[in-house]
Image (tube, rainbow, N blue to C red; front, side, top):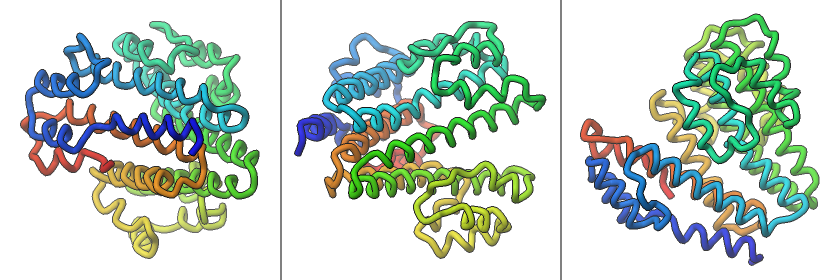
Length: 326
């Protein structure tokens, strides 16, 4: 096991225990829940509010990413950075949404405190054009530039710019994967391909269930490069009715993910967790091991934030359902 994988494994040793989760799940008082987290995490010092704790947990995750990247070089470092640039993309999507919904002033402090905001210019009162022009020196500029002069409603701008960024993200990952040696390249392409499949299926489900779009429009929003899902297969699925889409899924390993609209995102997160956990167990690729370890750590941070948000209005079974298994 390489030094970097040893260090990644050590970081997973700090994951919340089952006992901590049980205590958080059975506790409804926010102050006492924060107290439980402070007992587990030394870096939580004077934080008293949910937002403060959430920010500190995420900042620590960001620092852990940086510390691991120090031990990577070449294509592994490039792929690691690109993989976790997803959090920068999420932030860009959030800023665009705030600008178009006129909520930037309300949320600007939280946006600027995000550690992934260091290369973003975010100012109160800025327009979408000003924000995108502020990204001129970034890799995202050419992807977002077409949306400056688009004559469309805000909801469409938010959706289409977000979709374009996700396509850009996965396209870059697949491009970098080709630079690895043959055996590891296949492993990485399969790993990324499975993430693309989950993203596409979620997109198909939401577009078919909640939007009135024709099949060609649906196909255009999907991402190529999924494992076992080429363009022809994606087009075929795009042409299915909602009932036929359910029937199609029943014959695949993805059946039951979309049985209920309210928990489909949880089931997808569990699939991603299993994907990462399998890579940890198999130890077939150093870069996939490191990425999977940090993904598992981030999922646990999301679990903890979820536990801070629940109160007595949630039943115990609902609280347990929110925790993505480790």
